Image 1: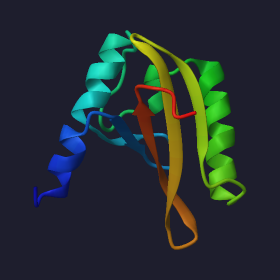
Image 2 (image 1 turned 45 degrees about the horizontal axis):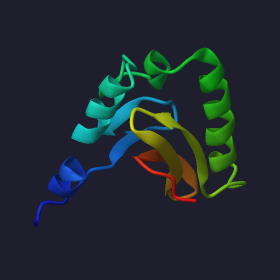
Image 3 (image 1 turned 120 degrees about the vertical axis):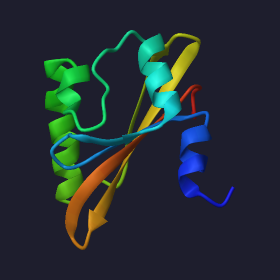
Image 4 (image 1 turned 90 degrees about the vertical axis):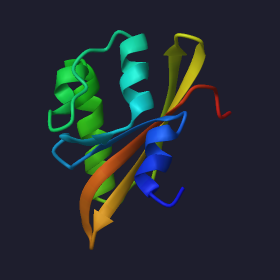
Length: 113
């Protein structure tokens, strides 16, 4: 596969990319499928992630993004129950120079521990 977007689109791991303001800039096919399986509405390119997260989750995410912006953290992860077992959610920041440019969230459908 020479087109990198095909790699992300065909990966059997949910991938959601957002900007520093929590606007979704990319989501692969598996992300949309998994959100549907989890009955989480609101995942849409160009929309704010607040549309698909509870307010208390957004408070936690703001803290995580701030830690990324302040370079206090290089990765964040958590586990939760999914439709077929444990989901491991990993968030990693990316930068434009020294400024936080966004966050890539990957959802692995098994425990990484």
